[in-house]
Length: 290
Image (cartoon, rainbow, N blue to C red; front, side):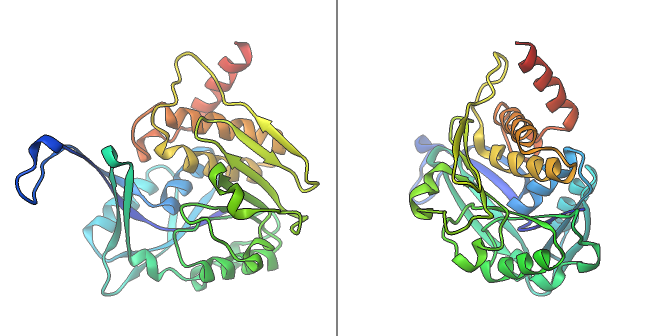
């Protein structure tokens, strides 16, 4: 099983209209409401990629939670590991597009703990995927549980890029934005770690456990334009987890994940842009023929 430990949020996108300011009030040109949170979106990507995927997180006991979980379950995400938080609302991520700025109110997600992990389903075939939106103390505890069960561990170093050495020692695959390279520094102290740096243009760089580094170009097809990267990283991470769970080699996992990221970046939104495995197969076939 793929187990995703992370945030579950409402996603709101707003484009402000500078010409509509009245005193301290302005009117938006664009408003969109959808499923958000890196845990929710990456579990969706893993499920759409064909992996048996369970999400562990926390929401409020509200209508918003019911709407979000229903939309995830529709695509095959198992949500029995999602707990309800008393006296807390389901969290929200608000993206102000013309400012390229996101404001996150974690709400109930902030109460997610490692104790929610269903240890009985973890084994040496399991893949555990997390991010850095939640409390990193709890994330490290999740990795400790996963390693005790011989599961494969993946950390998406986003949105925060600071990480303790004790956490990094428990990670098998680190997926990070290329802007985090300087902050991470020398990773040679972690000989079991494979690192994937994602670039803003759809390409990536692979750093193997041996220390060798290899740039991997973006997937280029005429009908796919890298215009909406907001969901691409989550599409990549979820697809990568599904590929490892399916037993694919690292090279094939990377290519399929890059295709999924490119497909996501060719469409607006996050939830709606994450592709199914059939779309990845069709795109990969066209890329290989081209």
